[in-house]
Amino acid sequence: DLKSYGEDKDVEYTIHAEQLPKIKIKGIEEIKIRDYEIKTSDTDVDKKISEIAKNQNNFKDKKDGEKSENGDLVVFDYKATIDGKNFEGGEGKNTQVILGKDLFIKDFDKQLLGANKNEDKVANVTLPENYPQKEYSNKKARFVCSIKNIKKPEPTKINDDFAKTLGAKDLKDLKIIVSKQIQNQYKSTLDTITKKDILEQLEKFKDIEIPETLIEQEVHVITHGQEKEEIEKNKKINNENAKKRIKIGLILNEFGEQNNLKVN
Image (cartoon, rainbow, N blue to C red; front, side, top):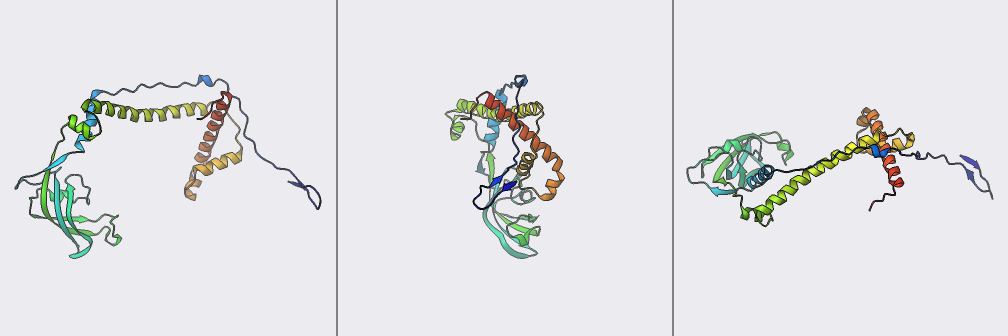
């Protein structure tokens, strides 16, 4: 509020500002923290290593006359048409597909099952919605595939040599590394659970009067990037979440000051 002003006079005004509430924390030692112990079994480690090995399979040429099966790697050239006409992107050389994974075009690779080397196979599919050339999205296409080679997977042998390809000294060392990786994955999850548990206990700890402008600012942070309709729809829950976040922040800040805690 502007009180007085004028030529050769000091300007007098009053500023109204909301202050952060002053709080005193008592009994915070009553907060309980669960202690979790992480253990990994030999079975867990062996299973993880087997999964890694499976994803690193080598492929060996099949003999003439051996037909393609799920899991085989098929190498082929193709020419594709839509309504009998060639289209952009409708031709490929030395394309590789592992049958059964369905990663090329949906329902494509199953139509190459039972193929022989040096023969043609036809695959009729619907091009995906995210096809690079938008004008062909969701169009039905006919692929004529010339099979050049068929390779069968050779399971990777889990031994010291395999371990070395992954940067370990030997298989024993690899098991130690994988065991630690599994523990770290669990630890990250448990840290999140523990943090959530502590914050929930802190949130119930004390009722605090929170300035309305502070709530509005926190709601703005929470809803940043959201559509107006979504913000309006979740107005109540956003306000509650904002209050919780502010409340927890104030308590943690006060606890840090009382105990002279500093972040390195």
